[in-house]
Length: 355
Image 1 (cartoon, rainbow, N blue to C red):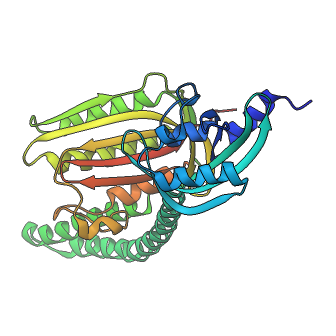
Image 2: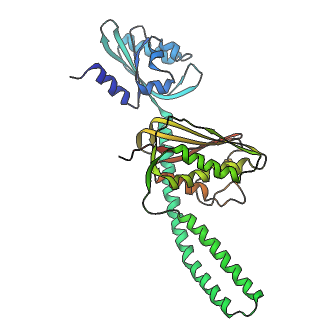
Image 3: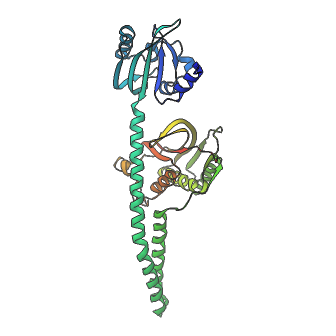
């Protein structure tokens, strides 16, 4: 038999926020998605009037009152609501008459779907497509460059045998050295291949390893801070690949602040019911690398994950594309926000078990 508890469990699985009001337009119930949208628990929401939940939203309040009075549904796309903390909320909103409950009379059901979420999903899909295209271009270019490099190195070695003086052989050594440097660069462009060597481990062990490595390299004027959530479960992933991806991100953050000194913070959190691309995950890991440097230049913000794009003259422009590719292989994604004084690179990584 389908019970009230079963119905509540189904509602809490929905990505759309659902709020039920009584005849006086006070909140009776709200599901988990609604709690996330309004940033308030259902225990605080119960008994609260809809006017108090969304103050300064008279058009919305009027639509709710008319729905209750006329028993007619109301829908508006990309509605702007203001939460009690004055934060703005962009939603697709539907207000419908609900069933009459014993003791509560006629009810009203409000459905709220964040349009910001859809916009973010679209942006993430675009980033995933961009990464696939740039990875294919990198691999194609790397293969085209790598083949003739072997011939150049071999010819330089043969030429070196024919030369009689150390001064002449010095020039062939320069050629060989530069070819080897280019081959290493090409190998970085190709990135790691093969199957993931996945195992379960504590993500904070990886973060601490990365922090210690970068702290040794960083100048004294750069402080690296930790803000970890100790309750996070273990992740099932390729440890070495995650180390490399995070090293790239943290080294970039240190480079952003090293000239004038500054702060870099490593933060770990969990996020429930989060969509990466088109996949909704029950639980994901959110790792943030935060710096208080000058920020990402606006002219490269849209292409920063493309190869050979760098905000520094001495940068190779490969660190971020490679990090993105490594995280993508785990079903995750790297995103960022940046304003002067606060740049945040966020790694979204699905939490999976070894089972």
